[in-house]
Structure formats: structure tokens, C-alpha cells
Amino acid sequence: MGRGKVELKRIENPTNRQVTFSKRRNGLLKKAFELSILCDAEVALLIFSSSGKVYQFASHDMDRTVAKYRREVGLPDSSNPQFRTREFWRSEIDELKRSMNTLETRLKHLSGEDILALGMRDLKQLERQLKIGVERVRSRK
Image (cartoon, rainbow, N blue to C red; front, side, top):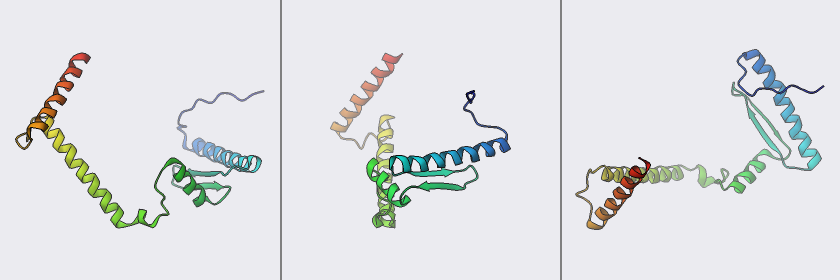
């Protein structure tokens, strides 16, 4: 006798949802443990419940595994001291502000505002962009 197919949707009854969470969490932790033992795999598992509790399993050091993951996907290494400094975040904020100002200026130019400050070359480029935009609208229409 096999198990019935479960419809994947949120369980509305909080008691049933908590029981299901606990059972499936334990099953998932068990599978992670088995995978690490049987296949000699480096496994790190983090589970955050809806109430904010954290459950974790790591076959090796969790920090080392997370750092390895970050390197593999190209994310900055959070253990790097420069990553956490105020200067880093200030420079990041300044860069985003400059980018935002540039985009706002381009938007103003595209809507016909503040074009007196543009030179001939910039005006021609703006004209080309507007022509392309009009052509796209017409083709979709």
C-alpha cells in the first residue's frame, strides 16, 4: 500500500501545520545526516520556522561551508573585515545615490524636462532613443 499524493498548499489549521512542520523537519534533518555519512558529502542545512526559530545541521563547520558556498556563487565573503566596515557601506550608498541621480536625470530628459542643459550630441542620442521607443510602441500596437 502506497502513500497518497499530497496537495502542496499551505495547511490552514495551525495545529496540523505545526505537526507537519515538526515531522518533515525531522525527516529532512535525518536525510541530510544520512547523505553526509553515506556519500561523504559536505552538507549544511538551515531551517527557519514561521515563529523565527532556527534549526540547523552541518556535517562539517557551518561557517566554512557557507563561506565555500559564497565563493562558489561569487558572493562577497562576509568574513572579510572590509565587508563589514562602515566605509564599505558608505561607499556603497554613495554609489547607489549617484546611480539613482543619473537615472532620474535620464528620466527627466526622456520626458522633455531639463533638456536645455544637454549638448548637441546628447540631444541627438535622446532623439534616437525616443524614435526607437515610438517604433516599439507602434509595432506592439
